[in-house]
Amino acid sequence: MIESPMIEGAAIENTTMADAAAFVARFEAFWAAPSVEKMATILTSDVILIQPLAQPMHGLESACAEFQRLFRWLPDLRATVA
Image (cartoon, rainbow, N blue to C red):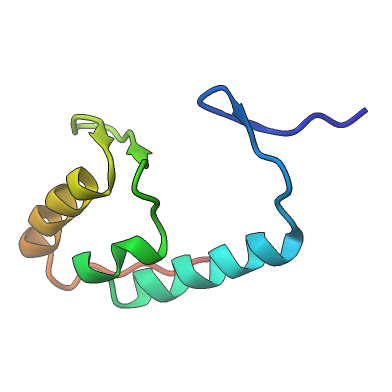
């Protein structure tokens, strides 16, 4: 039996390969030209982001505020999905 992966105690169910591929495409497009205005294309309103050297971000509004500071500090920040 294959179990569903867990995120914060909730099983990821009914996720198809097409759903996953669509997310990867949105994630790649976002990081090619990131902006706070486009964050809702890759994050949900109840997102929790945890990263080194920063306080956890709870919710889209918190994530947008933190990334706005990051994008001001590093305005040319880009990423490539490999």
